[in-house]
Structure formats: structure tokens, C-alpha cells
Length: 537
Image (cartoon, rainbow, N blue to C red; front, side):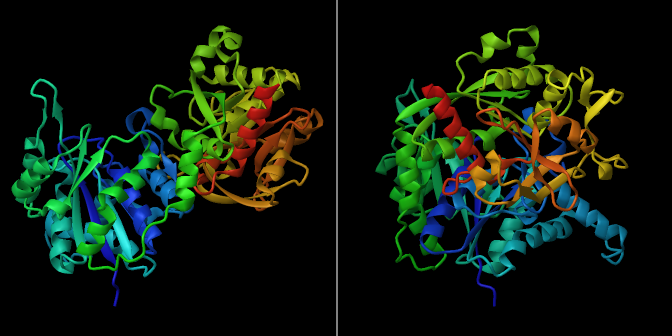
């Protein structure tokens, strides 16, 4: 018999309260207590996945090993838990409806009228239980996107109600994350928004088992009593979640508040083993007490919304902490570099990262940034499009192929040093059709990449349509830029380097997706180390 327990995290009053961080922190504590835990996200939007969404709309699109384009919260889950997620960890309304409609077209419903209840809710329940049915997890935490009361999240709330009834309250519990605002004029915390939010949840047939209350001020015992009384929970089930200095403090804060103990008690699981968080707190201590500071320029197109590059900035934190170094990010819009003010914008940097992206906007600025890093011996890391820009810059300014470009930017370029991948040429749909997920790469031993990984064979996650055009490989290599990482099956160039430069590496894959708190990514560790050495000079 499958004994997997389920924890559902809903949100009330307002969005952006941090359901993902609370879910990840709880999972971390339960993991530390010896339980096998995973987290999934149910997203109420009708897109099949965030792959076609503008980063300004939704922040970064995170990619898993099995090639799922997912919500950036899955990045938090992986970084906290240090275990990979998969296609099953992110479910959207679009995917649910698509699945039900496909079944209807095949005649699987035997002529019945297809409805939200039971067909949509059955499919949601099936998706929720997918991870539990693998037998790999003791506890599955499910974060429900949006805010209670949103029309689009109603089928999810109804599915949770049904599951609680089917599985029993000791197998499925609901944590409701809510806001207790402080009114400066009245000089007090207000419980009414939380009461209304819980009332709305109860109208859907769910009584929360635990309340986690976000607040800027300490929640007194009196207020906890009041919330317990009006929200139908015990006083010890009201947990305060004060604003934290960093997201990495939240597991400790939740442990102090006893969130994991309350959850285990409700799920009738043993709570004898206490969370040690030894390695975690070692990381936090180093992160908060750096011995030096460096400044890295992040050149991108979506820098106004920092969440567009969430995994990159987190990877900086992980690598910086290991080196006991604070990494300050200077956000630079690539379009701002197109007016000939490269020197002014990039002066004083200890390292330069040219970020991923799509389309031709801001491309020339990225190319100018690469040139500046190459000519001034500044440590450089190019990721995905950033690597492609490094190849174009080298072809133009070292090989003298002035027309060199990517066919993504100019279909008729005389020198397509970056070209559409062969398997992409017949594709017309945008969603889920790129080269996605984990692919192997073989590294040359005499390379910066090998020095970082200490391994000839690596596997990294991809998300791209265009590639290094191998027709130009011999020409580019003879001019001094080396292809030091190759996909063993396809021959695709994965890594380029300039051996005569102190640290110049471009990668076609996304190393940032695999960086976690306990396993900082080797390439970021090496890049930050190079930037530290440069800053000392």
C-alpha cells in the first residue's frame, strides 16, 4: 500500500507572499528529519507551460533534466532540496485541459458530457498523485498558484477538497499562507483580511489545518488566539512568518516557529529526529559574512525584472558564499551599450556575464560587451545566447568576417557562424519545441571547463534553437578560439574558450539551472574565482 502523505499550500489576501519559499523551507526541514520529500507547483494559467511567456510576464523559464519548461519556483525547490524535479512537478491548467480534451477526442469518456467536475478535477487529482504513486516519496508538498478566490484556481481547490476526503485528514493537510498587515495609523496588526481569506477557503469546503501568517511585526499571543478562534484552528497551528533578511533564513525561522513539528503531528508521522541544517547554516554564515566584495556585470535584455535571471543570481550567491565573497551584480541593459558608451558602462567590473535571451533586440550591445571583456582580459562567461554572441564577436573582429551573424538575427547573413539546428528547421510551433533538457558533453582536458568540472564527461540542461555552425569550426579554431566541449552524439559545439585569455568561456547550455545551495555549480565557482583574482590585480 502506498503511504505517501500530501501537504497543500494555498495563498490568501494577496499574491507574492512567498508560497514557494515556505513550501521549499518546510520540505528542507522534513528532508533534514529523514523524510523523502518533493514539491510540485499547480499553476492556474492556461498556457501549457511558461516556455512561450515573455520573461517580463513570468520571470525566468526554468528547465528540468527531462526537458520540461517550468515555473521559476521549481528552481527554488531544487536549490533548497538539492534533488532534481521533473515534468510531473509542474502542472498548468492548459496541460490539464489539453489532456482531458485529448481523451474526449479519443472517445475515452464513452459519450458522457465532459465537465469541470468530475473530469477536470479527476485529472488534477491524477497529476497530484503522480509523484506519490512512484513510491519514492514519503511526503509530496503541492503549492497551488494564485490566491484563494481567484476563478482560475477553483478547480484546484475543489480537487484538494476531494483528495482530503478520499485520503483522510491524517494523509492530506492544507497550509494556508496569509497576510496580517500592520496599519500604521491605527498602530496595530489587522486580522480581518486573514479571517475573510479563510472564510473564502471554507466556502469551498476546505478548513485550513495550519495558518502561516506573513507579517512585518511580531504576532502576539492574543492575535494568535483571535486568529485561531475565528479561523477554526488551534492556537499552536498559527505560525508567524516575519520578513526575513534572506530567503535562506526561512528554513531556520520556520524551524523556530515549529512548522515542521506541527505538520508531522497532523500527518501522524514521527518527529523524533531534529533538523540539524549543519551544511545549510555553514552556507548561510559564509553568505552573511563575506571577506571581500566583487562586482559582476550582468548584460541582458530583461534586466528591469531581476526574476528573469533568477537562477543566475542564485548561482552567484552559491559560488560567492563558497569563496566567502559578496557578489554585487551590476544590471546592464544590452541596448544601453549600443550608443558607444561601453567603456563608461562596464568600467570597474571584475567579471562579465552575457545572459541568455531570444530575438535581435540589444544584440549589438551584447557583442560590444564581449569585445570589451576579450580585449581587456576581464573574466567572461557567456550563457546560451551569450556564448553565441562571443562566437559572432570573434568571427567579426578577429577573423575579419564583418558580416558574421546568427541566422536568428539575419537570415541572409553572408557568414552564418550561428545557425538554426537541423532538427529545428521543419518546426512551426513555438511551445516545447526547442532543444530542451539534459544533454551530454565531452570536455577537452586542457580547458578551463575541465579545470572547473574535473571531469571529461558532463551533462547540462539546454533551451535553444540555434547552434555553433560547425562549417566555421576550423576557421575559428585556427584564429585562436577553441571548441573545448562537444556533444558526443551530435557533434554540437557546447563550450568555446580563448586559451590566451585569463578566463573566457562560453557555454551553449544553462549551468545556472543546476547550481544549488549545497552544490554550487563548478563553472560559476571557477568564474567567481577568476573575478576575485582579477579584482586583486
